[in-house]
Image (tube, rainbow, N blue to C red):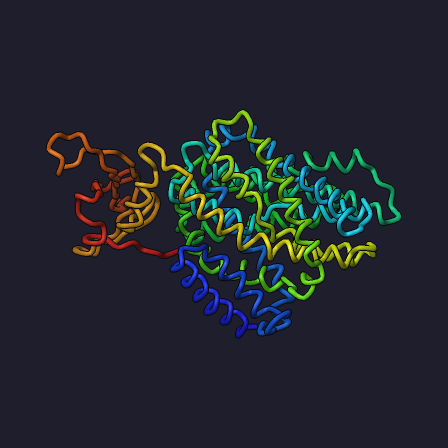
Length: 490
């Protein structure tokens, strides 16, 4: 398995580099690498690696959903809440209906089989969509109207909704009686319980981090461990209490950000570094699950059904956005962002076949084909359209992120060492401000600057004592690394 991990790292990074050089999303290259090295093409990955790939993919998905949670702000959620609620169900319903109608006529499937297939195809992929939305949020794109946040929230609930519909339809093939109302009630219950089981530990973690002055890596690992336990809780309580644990993961990050923005920023920065490796695992292993030989069985008619279903889905997405402040181009971006398939299709595409559904083999083929036809092109379309359509807004927060990345500035709670004196200081305050440019004589041009206050840790004379220093960093002020270095310790 060690060789497989090495292969994933080396080939995944190479593919990411090449695709980014071509101005394309690096995840597309990772997906292609996964398909090629997977068991259905060159079979370079060991059986042990494929056996545990589900766990690796889940951990990687948790990392990116945590990052998403640490970017969700309450005011933005208030602005997009209604639209996100509509987008979490209406597009999927339209696609399920469209696939059911078209598959019955073009593939000769029964309405029940076609509806079951539609419930598999009707889920958007958080594995593809969330990283791209996080990237836009990191760069301040679409922040003015909260478009990336809208898609983040809606796509997470969309999967919950679709999987419940899938379970309802699948139960029709078993001996168990279908309790339709009970199954439908699972949707709001799982969403509500998922949010609650994320908010509660998130609040206690915030209180713990306030009381204990732990270093950032420790905080990050504890948050990641709790998030993984939340997904385990969903498995343990399956059949008893439905829990949308992935929503809980996002809620965990949200509540920490709500209660303490400095702590949330530090953890988010560490997760961003961890995501470099998690991203490789996620997309290469998702690609490795794709059996292109099975996809071939679906043929042109299968591709026509998938694209027809996407037309229905796009209509549903557009209708969900009526009444929002989004203009036509921004609505079309949301339509495109809601197209990629991968995660759910790879996870449950083979379930109908194992359950003895008459069209199970064809359903699996269609699930695989939908990944091939929508994930890479969809990711490319999202990135290209996002760069052209999503605005930065006035005085975008991205300017501060650019400045922080340029100078490698620390966050509140981190420790730094003076290069000149070797003394250790702690960052106790930071402020993002717009200041007048020194090079502009009229004083009319504003540039972003970050004020940071350092505290020399000294409690010998009682708490709250010790020397403090304040510095301002901008493109016209001294660089951080001329005087300081960040201590990445525990």
